[in-house]
Image (cartoon, rainbow over all chains, first blue to last red; front, side, top):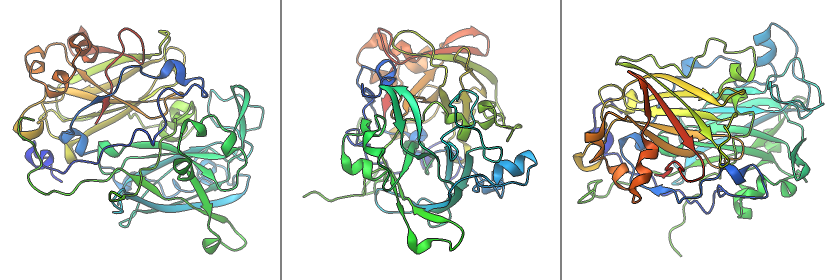
Length: 253
Length: 188
């Protein structure tokens, strides 16, 4: 893709529509904070222009070699030699689009609580202690085939004020850019077998059980690292790009 | 049965601690201290865009994280796309981008759009990011034929996408999530 004013970017194929009934609705009163933060007007549907069909390009050179190792990256950055406390895990998977095409060289950012359920954030005051060797911030980039992995410790569950004290299941937040603005996505990864998943008001903002299942990472014993780490598999799907059949514009648009 | 595709991974809120992964120094982590993702270094006229996100009661959304996408000064995207990210100040909810004035970007079929910034809003209580645009108050002529603004049936709502000029090169943009002056949000 080149920086031509236009025609090149304007002629790129469109992305498939986002299925808004599959995603959680803006207004989901079981999660109380949504009540005042949800628009009441319908979203304005508009065809995609070049700005929506392209996106920022991140270079692998921006990454530090420990960016995808949350077990050691915080200690290394703060001059300690320790490792994070908790159950060592590796999360791996593929980023593809809805047509099954791999999404190569896309930036994936992750953040999470420590093994006790405490975030290293100036606004988190939960009584579980901070881990001096855990920051909870990582990032990586997919390879040519859309594959990614990172190492961390399994995050703990924690309470939050909603319906009295609700409890979040163990989760890792993730952010992915894709190849274009239209594919931008931030979501959360849960872990297979966690009994808190069906009780969580944030999980339950999603109405379709099949959609919730897509956020649950599966234990991958085939890839376990013996005497080292358990492994979870988590695939991510971004919006698919349509094929070009004729010219990618309509009369009068 | 229609042809089946894979389904997009569903969204979940970015949560109150989104800054740990996206703006770690803003969260208080002593890492990536030299990152200033809300400051754009690119050729063009330097501008400041400041603002606030308000909830349905008029209170500031103090934990919001915003992303900016725009064309460069020549109206180009692709490799030229400018991207930036800012966190609201926890005490006040104010955010700020130091960027450059975008050129007019092409639309479909050779038509042009008025110069604009695209903004995404992520926060606790926002289940899937909100997508809006900021236009410049001095571009009225170009806005008269802008395809996005013209798509807004309720003409009085178009002005929710036009920033206020504080002084030359300095704009203020208030994003209202809900209420009488609710900002227009897009599904594109």
